Length: 336
Image 1 (cartoon, rainbow, N blue to C red):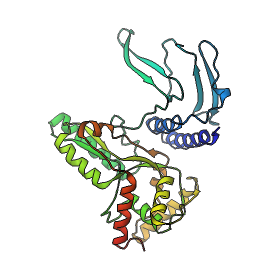
Image 2: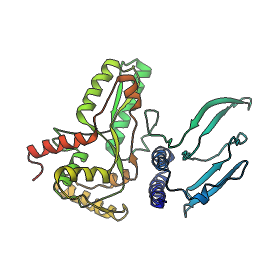
Image 3: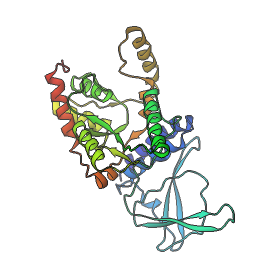
Image 4: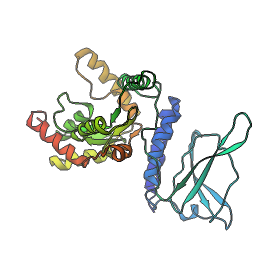
């Protein structure tokens, strides 16, 4: 019984809900929480058998966890074969993951004028099913973190407006987190690679990101130009990776020992504010910022299924991006 897996999920959801609740960002809870839940139900080794029992008919609800501030709870629903429920409305946000068996869910829509119900989408869940963020997931300028991310969102929305209102023949591509050679500045992700490769990153926070080789992103741009549909948005990503795994891979490539200290975010905020103040005085970019800590609450995982299906987009293993980045950084004096 791997209860540590369930405890890790509880901790991740507590961190997620804590930050998103403060920011009143329910969309972030649904987007990131779906990814966390999908990862949990991929493994059938954490649910106690006492929480998997069900009466012969109907269903059972087994409380696994209730947040002390009552912001969320985790419940094991166990359905008898062929059990059904009346049409109902949950009237709150929720996430569903399938651990065993299967479930068919029929949605309904209510006609606002007559009050009549009409059939909506019918979906089926199978073991391990979980949803990743894709092109249909929408942010608002209020839900993104930091001026840089906000500027990119505002620019994207303006392009969408020009497409819709002025027939701009544009296709939008959204890279996830590119890594690889020729990261001159370097980017924030490139800085993590450099710091980890030189032994200057002894600890980390629990977060995740989608890593993709920069050359695959470049190829994806050409594919979108050639095959993309006007007005469509395509995510150009690679693989979902935890920061801990990424740092372990860098350590393996460079022959160093991987960091094992996992830090809570809260105590790091004063350090981040101090680093930002020092950066204003020196003109140098801070390695740690408050916005970066806020973003680390969310595992930034994405799906490129649409780009693969419509554009023929492919991405090589992210480890090759790490190797190419390290080779380039080493050849240009970044790893001293």
